[in-house]
Length: 304
Image (cartoon, rainbow, N blue to C red; front, side, top):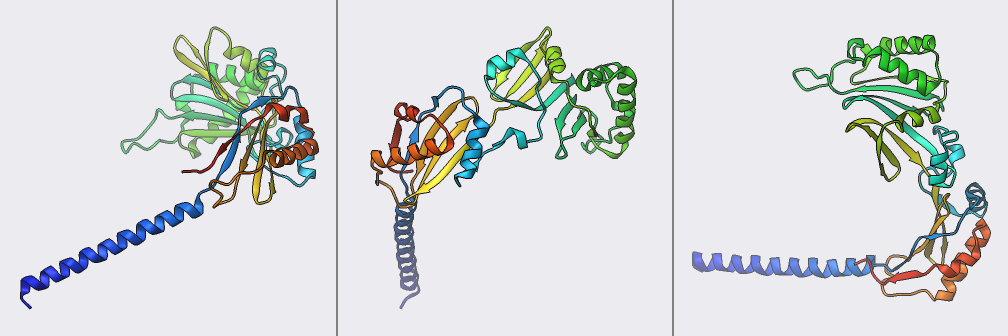
């Protein structure tokens, strides 16, 4: 066999092998898609009015349902108590907490207040304006702190400290500075006086409300921001291999959906069956059963 015929033979074999691989790969991909494909039901969010959120969570736990989501229970979370702020109570119309408060000295420097894992108030000064030649953040030296007058005012207002106690706290904060880079933190047993902080942020300001965080500005300069937590959870149970989910917000918004198992594409659940399952769940956790009549589920036959 001539050299050219041998080359042609090898090329034909390579092309045939590639074709087989492509066919097997494509066929395998189709099988994988069909095996992993699944149907689902998704409902719209409905406002059911005031609810006893903590009672619902407790009953769901006792019923053996699974619960998931951040801050399922506020009474078990280390968060800042907001006190009584009328405008926020009108806005949220429910129990809520504050996850963090940041008060800005300038764009790169601010004080942050939040709760640590021991439920103490963690006060942190951030200053990202000082770098060395390599671009690394340099140690947070006392000389890099904001003006004492500003820091003392923020500490006194936020923690309810008098001038002497504010000065002592600031001195401790500065003593910690040489061991840290860009940030310096200190804990205190004092609680954040959130009504006082919120009143300060609302003076001569413009605010933007983005999701669960409010940002405050004065003359286009960032004044501070506040992170809010509205408790919510997803209550889940399985029935006939289908996963029934009820999303519950403490503000009274509820959504139901169903995740069907892998390989269920095109299959449906009779309406009377899934409504009976949700009705039982609503009764067990103390949700208003009559609201089920207002909740429609949209069927999706495939995830593809």
